[in-house]
Image (cartoon, rainbow, N blue to C red; front, side, top):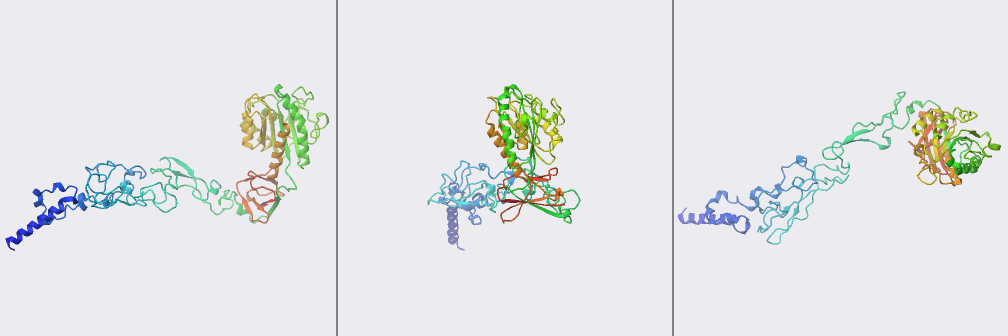
Length: 515
């Protein structure tokens, strides 16, 4: 090759190197001055191409980061760490929340960009945006999608942590917390062998899967367990026994459960007006019960007397006999009831109390619905749990109703919190003692009694309790099995609904059981 040709070639290569390294195409063009032109020989041509500057190609940012690197919460704001002065690479190198500012990049380089936490870029729903070019500079990054709270069941990794459909499906919790749970049909939770499990809150503030919960199994005969979690123990083991079915049309029952009342009336001096109201209205209560076909008996625990100026009690016919006497349905135990002694007097009179030492233990029926009514303007000295446990041992289950001080002031000497506790626990009625319209009081007691009787169904034969199944049917519609909203009393041989929302006129209650 001639010296002339070689000189031309070298000159061209030097000019090409200067063009690539300098000029408007590169932000650092000033560093590639003429004195260094010789360093860009043919073997290094293009090494300083702006598209490869610093190997900081935007498509490679964060590619080596794990989605869950260092347990960083993807929903927290990104933490920017400065890497130096701003260069034309589509990133905020100096962490001033601006990208490629004051750099004449001439829109060279990758126009894709991302404004979310680096570890979430390209993961799940997190996608790049673009930097628009105005002919000279790149603009603000737009169109990118960053992490958001996980959306349940959309099959998308919304928070870009590499996991689909977690988070919103399990509420945020405190790491280390635990709670009861059930991993199957929640209607079976806690029934039979279907015991509850436990789940623990993990470091990502999400509840882990429920563990240790019991699944229903096929019934195993004679093991004393409800293996299939249907609320019945060993039901399938009784299939060879006779099947019985009783049908009851709500509001058309031919036979109602009998009702026994025990009323204690405070005889303290502040009760004079209330005692008069009791005397004037209790007879009509008896009349309404009798006219409704209810088989009732009534026990009065209070000082007997006929002086209207004193807080003693005299009940007239038709509930009582002539001259405040007893009758087939009414028994008066003349026991002075003090301001705080109503609970104690009811317990003491079970075996005998008062001047004649009369009792009521032989007056109550074993299969009756038992209702206690306390009338006082003061508090009990005996706690409710003590009274409840002792009386239950005497008469079985009962309902407590209170005509007591439900709030302070007026005629109330003290709020009857221990009576309120009993009425609340047993589902009884609560009436304020200062509301002297005893006609209304009687209405409430009467209607609640009718409602309870209409939700109780006496069976025609004695069943195997574990075999009982209860259904309701509306008209000619299908049978709907009732689970968890009824109880069976073996003494009264009756089914009682604890939730009466399904019992309306025309509904048929069907009870099936084995003998």
